[in-house]
Amino acid sequence: MQKQEFTITVYTENQIGLLNRIAIIFSRRKINIESLNTSPSEIESVHRFTIVINETEEVVRKLCRQIEKQVEVLKAYFNTNDELVWQELALYKVPTEIIADKVKVERLLREYGARAVAIRRDYTVFETSGHLEEIEGLIRALEPYGLIEFVRSARVAIIKDSKGFHEKLKEFESVEPGTNVIENEYLGKQDEVFTM
Image (tube, rainbow, N blue to C red; front, side, top):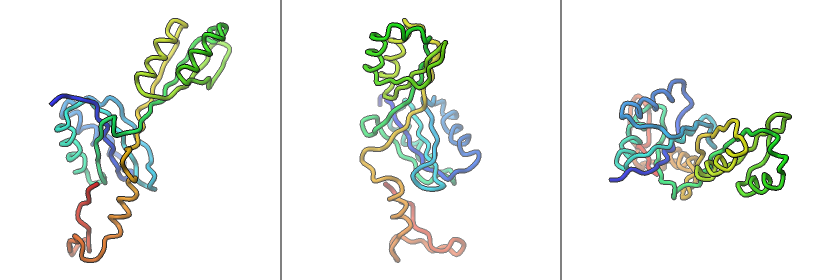
């Protein structure tokens, strides 16, 4: 199997130390994380990790199963880029004097969908969002003008063919009596593990 870019989406409880335990799962297998973003999800008290790696599908599948063994992890999914809507944000700092060639710079910024977010006497900061190729294209275009600094965010992504994790949670919480229910004297009635 050939390696390709996968985005792993992990829904978790918001617990201290979980990020470290998830990162260890990757480092033990010597897998480099290309991008990592954590943020609150659409569900109160549930966080979402978005992790980008280059690996084979078999390895990614095993990683997701291993991540799901963490007590605080609710569910882990993996997707290819075609199955996602995703963006990254980038900031570019350039000398303000380049704006003197206003027509050329404006055309360049419009071409990449960039806008000024801070204009100071000695520097100007532009912002754009898009895919990696677009972000790196603007870096190359700004380098001749004296690119001072550049920073790119981690990926944010939404799965195209999904109603959202909150719908799965609702299904999980509204289990009809007698449907895949396990009796447990310590936990009361608990639904079996659900899949998406």
